[in-house]
Image (tube, one colour):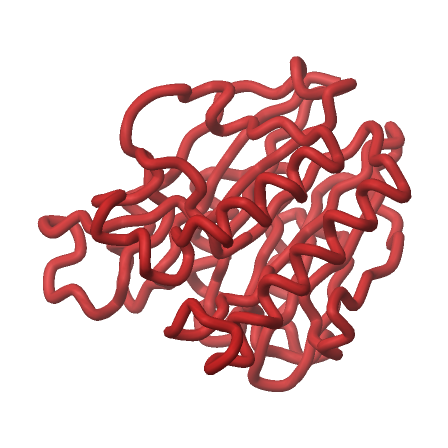
Length: 262
């Protein structure tokens, strides 16, 4: 069984339903994981997605904020969600394919502007969220699993446009990178994107604040696809669809793709 999976922070699935349909039409991944849907589940515009062959959806939502969804051409079973750090946010959902592969879709908290939990509650929540993810993966070692989503951390020096300038900027601070690394190690997760593309600058997010995001190219790789060691070798053909960032009224994230032969 071979399937292609994509992850994309859509920044409002209702506002950008047309862009989701465009991606599904042009790229046709078997599975699309969305984050920051900003919609209750019952208001996600599923009919348009179903018309394109995506008959299955597992999602968690809330009005105006957060929200995660897994759209699939393939049958999937809802495996529930975890409320890490007891935030009460719709930031995680899991589903299982018929071949037994589990897909975790995460939207890790962004962390606010100041990388100091003493003055910024949101930064503390982000670190606590990652700590509880780590502890869960230690306690319940994942197997035959894929983890995707907007993890809101660019861990490597070549995952950001300027490593030194961003060391004190939320998403690339040493403490965040350390927390993400511990979370990854706890589940023995393998970064599929970097397994396939081991060298060179690679970004999946560009700020709305840049007058010309493409020319400035001040990007960060915040969106990730990981897999457990038992299936990581089956992952290949990783790519980030940078042109999608330039679509009309786009999300500030671009979709990340990988294919798995299982």
